[in-house]
Image 1 (cartoon, rainbow, N blue to C red):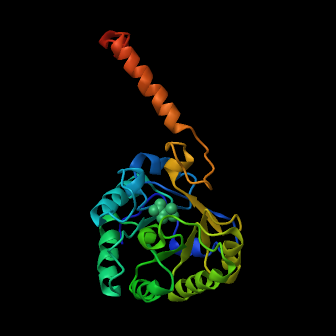
Image 2: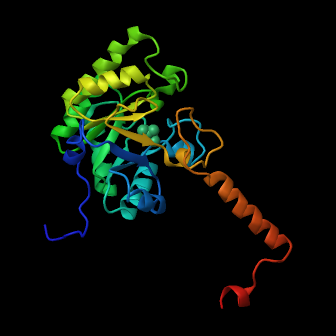
Length: 269
Ligand code: KIV
């Protein structure tokens, strides 16, 4: 107990205590440098398995390996001082049994030093969430559109379009909250359903393509920065990083080709 850090990170109980209070700000990040910027503004940073698609060109998150999550998780923890860091458990590392989930979640926490893990699934994952939280692993749940199940769902589809399907999602939310999840991501869910769940459960809801009524919001950083040519319809784009990078790269290429690129005497003065 001798090591004192200069900055205290946001804790899991602090996030849980924000239910119905000041909205929770969160973003994804996968690298030390973007995480250091996001850290100034976010209450928590998610090292999402979306990194498989966003950074590594995969078609879905299904192929993301545990070691990749750990590598990016370490980078984000190193780059940050203030925000709680949550790391996604990738597909195939937690569904089999609570014991398998514990082994892999403990590996993520020990190797990255993150503060919590996130896993997808509602009622069916409740037993696992209880098993992990009772053994010292804080869990953020994730229901609605769960990308790791996109093969079963037939793609990335907004959930709850038919009102008679709402009860299943409400039951999922209640089950993970009762099992001990400290917060829950509601992804790709019709607005009134997400608002209804937010009112019903005692833990903070974090919306993505859900409702402004959620207790907090999360976006994939590269989407909101305008880095990708395509972004989901619900994403408000705040930056123009894609065109900005292209302008810089094309200017560099031109300068190299027409030999106007600065020489040693100009650069190292
Ligand atoms: O993987 C991810 O980035 C996520 C967010 C979209 C919530 O799970």
